[in-house]
View 1 (spheres, rainbow, N blue to C red):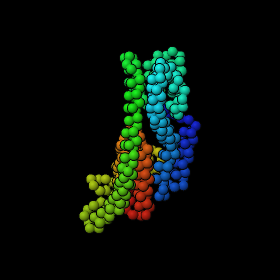
View 2: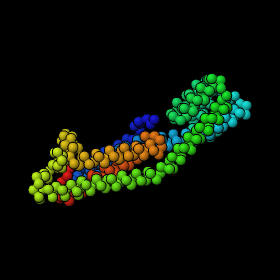
View 3: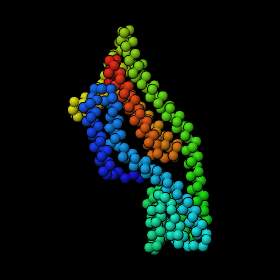
View 4: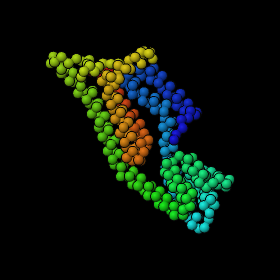
Length: 309
């Protein structure tokens, strides 16, 4: 689990975001890139936290990949005749990358006469990795029940290697589907842009020219086409935000961002087996949808066409 910190780099990112939002209001207010530039501001403010999340995910993967090597070496040491506790101390002297600090602490706890099962449970909790926790629970239960720990470690090693193989095969097989999902999503955004900025204005003009009674400011049960955000003051902005959200601009933008969020989460579940792994896909898709939809809306508004928002 990533701990939310507020270090110097987070403060710098927040300061940069504040500078960019003031620059957006001062230089780009009323221009085409004014609203899309807000996405840049949000990314600048939250980038360190997203980097922390991705760094932690990478660290957990490395820990999970190194753990089978440790268990295999531990099993070999025990088979050679070493007691389990001594084998842990001996094997922990090796280099296991990101897992090494946790193994050093495990070795120190055993040398300080902390019970074998308790030291292993502490080791699992500190790694915060669910795969390692499950494997350690099996080893500890076997040790407490007086079972043959060599056979248990061998079985655990085979199980971990099999899990790793399955994950790699799933990730490899899903790569093409990920690319297809991105293509489908951007096609969806293109369709949304065409419907909102070309089809609906044409229908409104056609309806008005044929005297069918279709309003140029409302459509479909009272959906407002001309709601605008008021940036004159924070209070006016909040008051105008509610009307803008239920306008055509707000509805299309929310639809695209909701689609992007859930599409990314599903991709993460398919590729990594974990919903949180899809956050990077969700961020990419939501940012893309915000920039593309708001940019298209701004272009239409600035071109003097039918105002949609």
